[in-house]
Length: 65
Image (cartoon, rainbow, N blue to C red; front, side, top):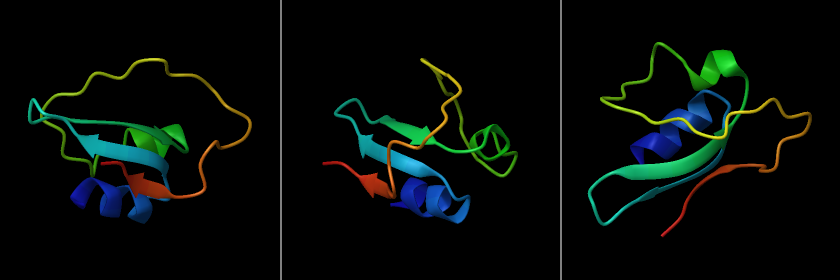
């Protein structure tokens, strides 16, 4: 819920979910300056499949269960 709230606050869209390994995974879209915001608190991250997009695929930031 924290990640979702922070994503929404930054104006990002996408999804997030907790994994069985105790980590968080998801997909987010938005301006690169917001995605890599210095306000984020991430202990370790692995960003993959980064690309420039012309249109957002999501309209909200949701929690997937």
